[in-house]
Amino acid sequence: MKLSIDLSHRYACMRAHTATHLLHAELTKIFPQTKQAGSYVGPDELRFDFFAERGLTSEELDSITAQVNHIISANEKVSVQEMPYDQALKTGAKAFFEDSYPEIVRVVSVGYQGNTSYSVELCGGTHVAETGQIGAFVIIEQGAVAAGVKRITALTGPKVAAYVGQLQSQIDGLAHKVGVPTKQLEAKIEKILAESDEMSTKIEQLSAGLIKSIIWKPGQIESVSCDAIWSYEDDIALLGLSFADAVNNIKSVAQDRSWLMVSATGQYALSHKQAKVIVKELGLKGGGSDTFVQGKDENIVKSVQLKV
Ligand SMILES: [Zn+2]
Image (cartoon, rainbow, N blue to C red):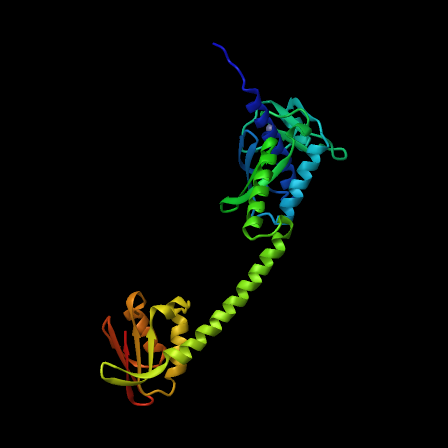
């Protein structure tokens, strides 16, 4: 039997796994009581699950990324020592207390911070000899796995450069789409959003004006004379009126009208439930079938029909 190791795969896993130690050390600074809830290490990619009641803010994520990259640039030594379990715990090494350990354990330390190591963990995994070999570290996603368990996904080594390159292409593509150099993209997006708000306001004003001037008018439907007819046609729906807008408009017109008929067509036809809401909103008493609702206004003692 012949066994061989795929060295490039192995180094990529070493980079990602050692970065997991650095990430764990930084998370402990923010959540001193946190514990690892799970971990995945692949070639230059890692997922780290940990117990926390809240997610990390973008400032905290930036700070973790900066700190981990700082330790990488400092090229700190990663040392491995074997010692009795009790002694290892005295060094402050992070351990999974629910796991059972042998009498002699493997303690992995990274660099020094004052008198103590930057990170100390009981670990049987594979590590780089110096942090500089990790190359670079970037967090690409933060999520939640379950209640109280958060997940961070990150990349190391050459995958960081590939990821940054991909992001840069996406940003350049967006800038090209809106016709500005990449450096002006943020200003352009702000301008587009402001213009969009302005247009929405104009459309709302236009819609309201159209309803008052065109839609509400006296007329006759099926031989019944009406003071106002509301016709919910397709073009009105295209203006983006909601059902609530329609009800409010009916209310404003119906105040001193003796007759009111509402007609709706095509896919915008009102359901019986919606018609009942109109009847209720207008303060009418009445009922009807799925296609026709009529009500009576007790105050002005005149019947009102809503045809739907
Ligand atoms: Zn390890």
